[in-house]
Amino acid sequence: MTTVASTELLALAQQTAIAAGELAHRRRAEGVQIAASKSSPEDVVTLADRETEALIRGLIADARPNDGFHGEESSATAGTSGLTWVVDPIDGTVNYLYGIPLYAVSIAVVEGDADPATWTALAGAVKNPAIDELFSARAGGGAELNGRSLAVQSGVPLSLALFGTGFSYDSVRRSRQAQVLHGLIHQVRDIRRMGAASLDLCAVAAGRLDLYYERGLNPWDHAAGALVATEAGAKVGAFGDDREGISLLIAAAPDLYAAAEPILLNLFNEFMAEDDI
Image (cartoon, rainbow, N blue to C red):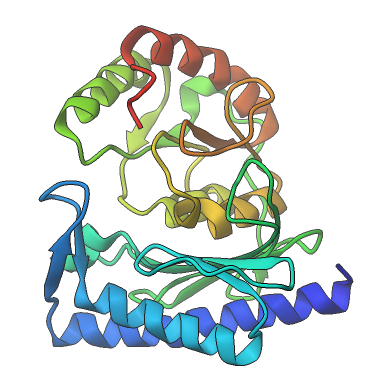
């Protein structure tokens, strides 16, 4: 992939995220309507989720009809170009439902299928329309927030590190995650749960969080945000040499990642079941 080509992909991701963010923000102002529940009654999808994804799919198909598409709210389609767009139309839907200004449109384009274990992320954009922030990155080109370069915080000791995480919609799994949290919270500065994985990853890139970890993330939850964090200097992965995926994602500056990984591993082994995803 040439620099020119990846720059063009980034521009399309940015432009599409801005347009989709405007639609989502407008629908939020008009009033949110729940369309359905997914994994549980707490895990909702709004009409705006579906409308926003339809807009994104259409804009990308018009610009790049041979690419694949993998979104949260519609059927995946394969392409012939070798590239796949991985999309969450509204990440943080519960925040969106309640009017909490922490939700985002997340758009990434990857080389390969929508599988974090094998893809190569090329470009991504995460737009929070509620506060007019656009995070973006392309492979090898660095990460930005509204045009300003980003770099992770390094040299932060574990005891002074601000962690972010998220929880399952399943109440049993959530209680186990709370046990991990209980074993962790006295070892770090504090912990935040903001409710949108893409923004948590971008927060690591921007130095608003020192480390973020979560289990149970789908590809669309982290495709764009993980690239932003990586291009800002974070290590993004799981335990050992595993790549990030549904079993686990950790993102932090490399030194903090190394300090936190064995602690998280011990806590996960003690409190979490293998199927807690």
